[in-house]
Image (cartoon, rainbow, N blue to C red):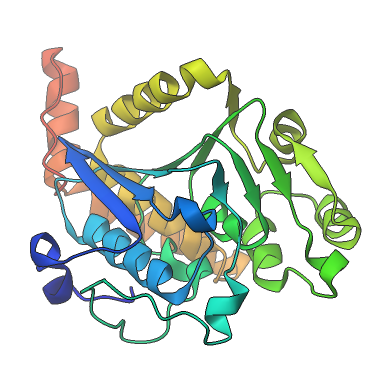
Length: 273
């Protein structure tokens, strides 16, 4: 993570410039709040997102993260002027990260369900946010575009974030042609997991978040961790690694509680331990 447990303990004393946050029981909501710039990603916004994601990781009461945005665009991608040094706004008190934030890595070690609530269009670097989420719920009219090649650029980091969800030919064709996908087209590629009517977006995301908050949180964390680790180890090592993860989980308090609740025909009381 880009921030330590000690740093994120100061959450309630921090002032944020471009994000809002809220915790409702086990659900933690992060809202991009730079609508006047179409939620374009500048270094400050990226730091604030990374800070809140780190808080969500370290806080054992948080079981699900929801990522939302205010304004007419969910995210327009990178703020190129800001990265060129033309960004003087800074009303945030969030500390500097240990190393510069790479948005594609921010969600990599969250190991908790993360739902993107996409109410509007997403472009370019905005896919670094969607690529880090386990679920993407989008409205029918949302558009998804990679225009970089039409500006003499290439979506390098976005390509890496989307490779787990898209076939190679589909992804490369999209990067080369820079076309815009409709929500239902994005659903077919795997970028989006659910398309809903705008009037139902909030309720659908809330229903999904509540469902995910009810399942065993430690099992989910360990499962997501194992999924990510599987990408790094050889096929010959995978089963031994997964067997070890299972043995660790079997002696956890949540596993014992889950088995006891099943035997006693009652709802489990998860502790996340």
